Amino acid sequence: PQCRRAAAVDEVPRRADGTMPFVKLIKNKAYFKRYQVKYKRRREGKTDYRARKRLITQDKNKYGTAKYRLVVRFSNRFVTVSVHCAEVVGDKCICTATSKELPRYGLKNGLKNFAAAYATGLLCARRLLQKVGLDELYEGNDDPDGEVVSTEAGKKTYFVEELDDDKRPFKCLLDVGVTTTTTGHRVFAALKGASDGGLDVPHNHKRFAGYDKEAKEYDAEAMADRIKGAHVSEYMEKLMDEDNAKYQQLFSKYIEEGVEPDGLEDLYTSVHEAIREDPSPAEKSEFEVTDRTTYKKAKKLTYEERKARVEAKKAAMEEEEDEDESEEEEEEAPAKKADY
Image 1 (spheres, helix red, strand yellow):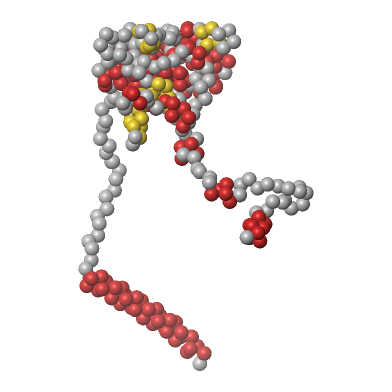
Image 2 (cartoon, rainbow, N blue to C red):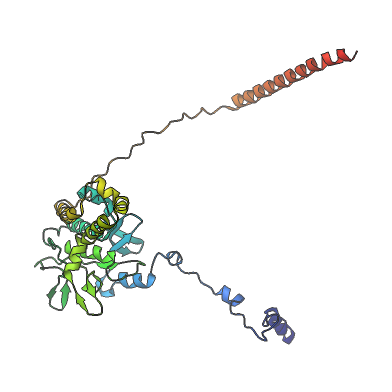
């Protein structure tokens, strides 16, 4: 037994070659046997499971009551705002809105900026409340002023202007994913849009644009200006004065649509009004393929037909071989006559 134990110890190298007298192997066989891989979406860097657990975990005494999340995500060109609830089989989407729909309401450019995120959050909120029948009870804030609206009822705080006597507001928790939540981020523009749309989303002003961390003061007008695209119009005017060529390059789509820096505020105001008038999704048009080429499938041959086809190919190959041999003989014949 002692010999076996000594042999087992010798199998694991405890000493490095050369300089160091003793090196302990950490990642040995026992380490890899007990190694457990993380969840797939954690490995891909898509899901923060620590945050997700706290967002979806419901109290046991609420007997499976759904816990809704306001999910905000940014792609390369668009903003997507949706409301989800977690179930055992997976997340269930209750309502969704994307900035790809905003051209229907008059906004055709800048579909990923701060103002577009606000408009998309507003669209999702109004669409959801229309779906559940709360759009008339909770209309939200028609004039976005950047202020945080809340109402206290008993020991609870609701982030709406007024509470209905019969029905409580639709509550959602903000889900930012793996986004870094810096002050003034576009995620909070979508949250503000959903809150002004009538949803009850718990929040405060400390991450809104216009909050000064050192002075601990909040400028609501700065937030309202960003919602109406004032920062974009200022940058447009600055480029027009300093570098007109760069203005023509960066805002070429705005120029094509005839959007001027002075008209951005009115544009976004009209978009908000159009969203409130009809937040329902557009009717889906049936997808039709116009340039499709059709191919007729050949009829399946019987065994006799396949056999006859093979024989015909063999005969054709034999004929080609005979023709090649005859041509070679004709070419060799005059050469022999010349030798005599």
